[in-house]
Each structure stands twice: as C-alpha cells, then as structure tokens.
Length: 202
Image 1 (cartoon, rainbow, N blue to C red):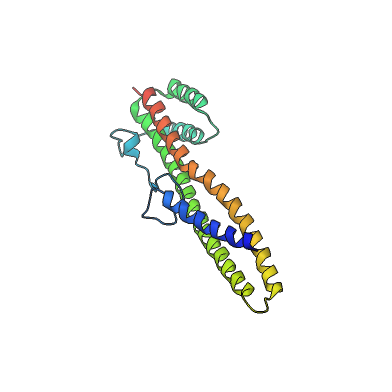
Image 2 (spheres, rainbow, N blue to C red):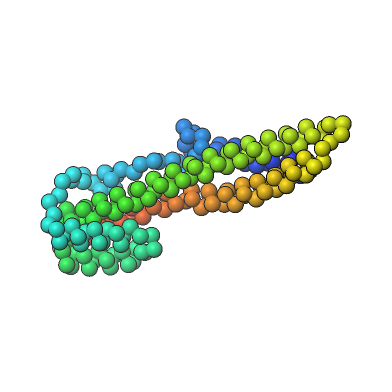
C-alpha cells in the first residue's frame, strides 16, 4: 500500500512538473514544453498577402484540388514539389495563384492545428483531475489505515482503483507527449509549403 501512496504522490508531482516546464505560464492547463501559440499568422509566412484575388472557376477548382493534397501530412515534400510543378505547368506561375493555393492550405492546416491544441488542453485537464483523484484516494487510504480497526475491504477497493487510475494516467501521458509535437510539425509544414510555393511563383 505504501507503494501506491508514493506512486500517487509521484503522479501529482508529475503533473506539476509538466506544467512548470511549459513555456506558456498564462495557461496552467497547457502541458507542453513548446510555447502555446493558438493562432498562426498568414502574414508571417507569406509576405504582403493580398486579401482579394480574382480567379476563374477552373482556377479555383485546380487550386482547391492542389491545396487539399498539399494539406495531407502523408504527402512528403518531394511529392508536394512535383504536384506544384504539375500545377504551374498547367496553370502558370503567377504569384497570385501560388498565394491562393497557400491560403487554402493555411486555412486547412490551421484549423487542424487548432483542433489538436484544444484536444491537448482537454487531455491535460483530464490528467490534472485524475492526479487529484489519485491523491485524494491516497489520503483516504492513509486515513483508513490509521484507524484502530482498518476497513480492509475499503482499502482493497481503493488500491484496485489506484492501480486502474495509474494505468489510465500513464497511457494518457504518452499520448500527450505525442500530441505536443503535432502543432509544431504542422507549423513547420506550413512554412515549408509557403517556401515551396513562393519559390515556384514569378
């Protein structure tokens, strides 16, 4: 039982440590070392973007098709480069066209990134609540064991719940570590695609 007491304390400290490592102290639920940036700026990736671009219907269809493909993470940069090359051969290399493609890509990936960030926050909040529940169970076990006649049935039930909660906590923590990388990877992809499309433009 002492093991479970120490374990629950360690789990609570783990959450606190994760929060301490987070670069964004304004949001205590943000568990990632990476700084929390909720929204990206198109202007940081594409210099002086135009707000209104006149496009024909065929151009709009081609742009949407290319942007949809470039937004997929499974499409590596080599294939992305070939797709852009095929597009420019068919539709030209005007900068407005390239910007229109990137605007579509930016919108799609930014929305995906926002959903991931919200998901990270939800998982983190759940982890904090779970650590608090583990700590409460630990305190209750201590109280029961300090009694003159401990209720071992209750102690056994708490011990079983602690084991289950610990398992859930560790599985979630692994997913948090993976999720924390996802917004960064999407941001890097956006910068890479912006560079690719700008280099293809006149």
